[in-house]
Amino acid sequence: MAEPLCDLVLDRVFRTARTFNSFTDRPVDEATLRALYELWKWGPTSTNQQPLRVVWCVSDSAKARLAALCAPGNAKKVLAAPVSAVLGMETNFVHYLPRVFPHTDARGWYGDNRKLIEESSFRNSSLQASYLIIAARLLGLDTNPMSGFDEEKVNEAFFAGTTVRVNFITTLGYGDPSTLHPRAPRLEFEETNLIR
Image (cartoon, rainbow, N blue to C red; front, side, top):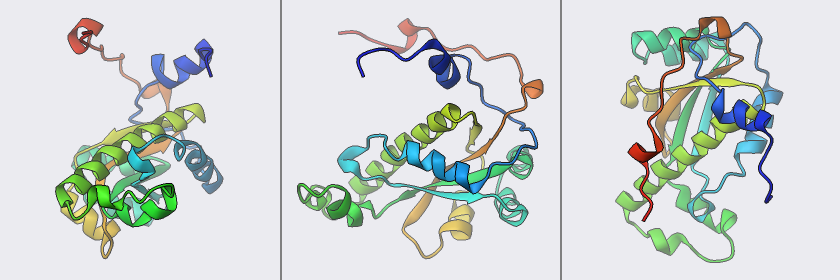
């Protein structure tokens, strides 16, 4: 683990990776979605809580259901992508702690503090969603994470009767490089970092 990975991996995951608005017609099958999970599930979360929940919209009807709840520009992307995903956060992750964090009873660390639980669910599901994006790139896939949807209606449509709430959505597939715009710049180290 001490040696850096090769430039090919670093390029694919970060340096030359792009966010795609359009994808090729190549499908993404269930085996690929399962392989994706088998990677991103290993990323660390606080108390190993693993709050990310994903609804993979693969069928035309599922994508149409999601698209109807999105801003117009996002709706087009959701409909056109091979897969669109609703990335949710389990706000009752404490229920799973005895199973996923068995060496101590961590439920008491959260108690009935709903603010702490919801903040932790949001923070750690966002972490896991980032792992999902990185895992997708490692498998040769591309994504387009988005806000721009009706949060309440997405919760009703995809998470009714559960304790899961939407965090954000993304599309997934094999990006069409002919549709890329010039890469947007990134801020400099000095603008975003302090060393004390």
